Image (cartoon, rainbow, N blue to C red; front, side, top):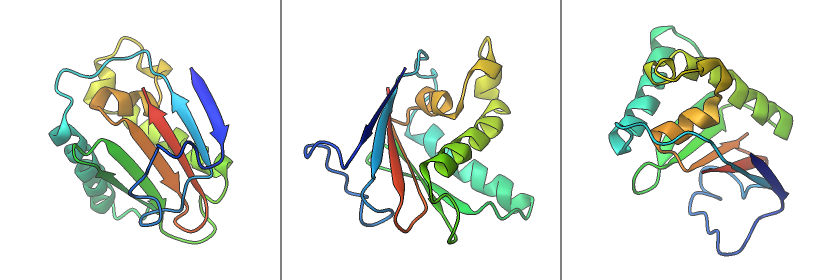
Length: 149
């Protein structure tokens, strides 16, 4: 289930990272996943995911065009920020980035344990390891935020 809203969102939804890592999100949505948390989901698994993905890219000498990191008291917020101009500068490009991350997520052991990994997407993966918010940005003037439930 998907709910999309435009504008800065409710005033009560204070975002300490907006204005520091990315601009105030222009669009927000709620993604409701049918999946539950993985039994081993926690702060450590979220940290390991971010560190592991960075290590994969380094090992392959691959420049991916974005930085991915976890923030929040329990590392429950995933932030993805482009590293160069002209990338991920529209909502469509931000969604395409999330779609490309789906392929990476499908290769994980966590997805392999599911009954139908081909039916799942990156946001389902985020839900399974306990991310409750995903923000993608070009790091300049475009940001999209997803609350994962």
